[in-house]
Length: 143
Image 1 (cartoon, rainbow, N blue to C red):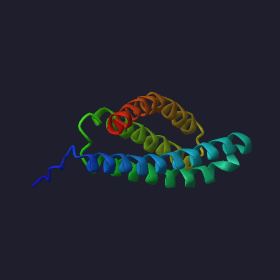
Image 2 (image 1 turned 180 degrees about the vertical axis):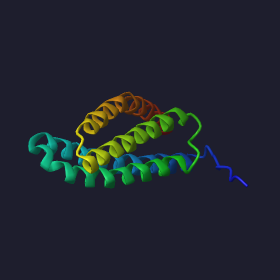
Image 3 (image 1 turned 135 degrees about the vertical axis):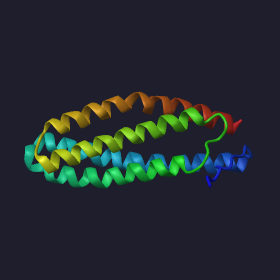
Image 4 (image 1 turned 90 degrees about the horizontal axis):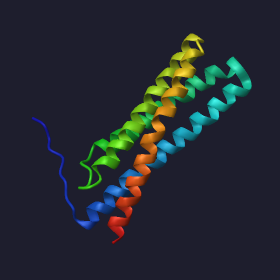
């Protein structure tokens, strides 16, 4: 039996949904900053920083995945579907990048770092889309 996600357009549900997105977004941004700091440390410290990057990437992958679960575990508000899809895709790409970084640390092969950086770059359009749509959603809920 598949449970159907309940969806309501009541104002309190809208606020709860926006709060839930906010929690997921804040956690993901914290993970993103940690990951960026470690990539910078790798640039400065060379391969000696690769092991630490791998540990942080593994932790961040869990944070991104938890955020993705937070977003996908409830049905989006009517009109917020595209924002949710953009955020989920941004999170998925970050999990994928973390996997590549963990692989780099495990193998010592820096080509996986290049792959991860390319994946992170490919996530930018989804971040822009989410931000634009989230702002529209906030405006709609404030009205």
